[in-house]
Image (cartoon, rainbow, N blue to C red; front, side, top):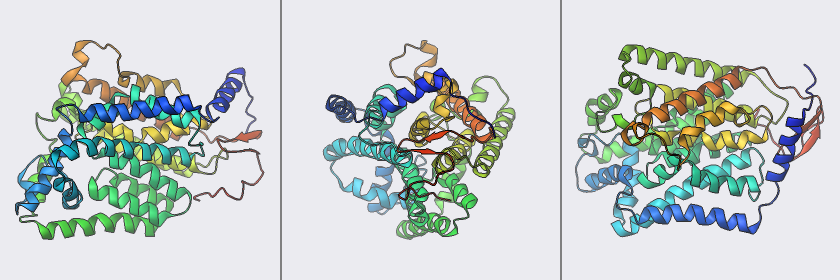
Length: 416
């Protein structure tokens, strides 16, 4: 252990953080609300809204008509997702045009709120209110996700909410949230590793049994459910086709586009994913005394997800919205990833409105997305493998200030 000397830069960060955690003025609240709602409304008025959601709705329509959803090779979700999409299929198109963008926006807001609460950030603070508005306005994948209506938004809401419940020792409820999210889209399957590391077998069982049970129910209601294994799964494992390839930011897909032999690209991505899993394990083993365990929980889960994104095919730009709210919320902790300049280097290519060369726009924007994914994963890996932070001075959190060695407040509950 060693003393952490407070430099002038650290004191400036503390003053900035103190200002950000103060209540947001009504003007900022109004501006953020207008930004978020404007994006949703403008999306409803566009012609190409809900392109990804349309595949799931089509699958539900096919089921209601007595057919097999897996006749469409573009439907890549579990049978449980078909059941989830039936309410959408029953809505008129004009109603869905307005409901879908609002639903995507609401889910992203839920994920942001849960990430704020996990790190004890007041939800009416400048950080929480202004941060959501700035994320919606400046982060291009946010705009893309609301536009296409991809069900990644469900995972973006579920992961922070599940970690919030887990930190409050409601691991069963956390498993239920993760299980329902997997039933909609199997993106959060890697989060099961967090339950394993925490030895929360009940929560893990719930997270597994919920999507399995719902998928079995969906399979019993559709003809030829085995098409998922004989047609859909092989199509997904081979990385789809030219339809999704231009937008696939996975290193496995980007490597051959840069002239790298595909087995080499697969090997590099696999090594990166294994390093990420190693980093997640090391981060879980290391306990800091600068908070009540929420940073350890969030960084472990985010590292697991980023490791999965490195090898998953496809891996799109909006996938990072699953981990980004948690990482941004962790900025209230010393040594967190957002306090590294490399985090902002990674986010740079995703800023909306920046005039990039035409070669990096349109169908080639996946190169920027791959850069963001790889640099962000390396930045978090460096944090996970770093030494434990032991603060022998005042420990400052978003919600309280206490002396090192003093017990936490009675209302603060650790997950461990």
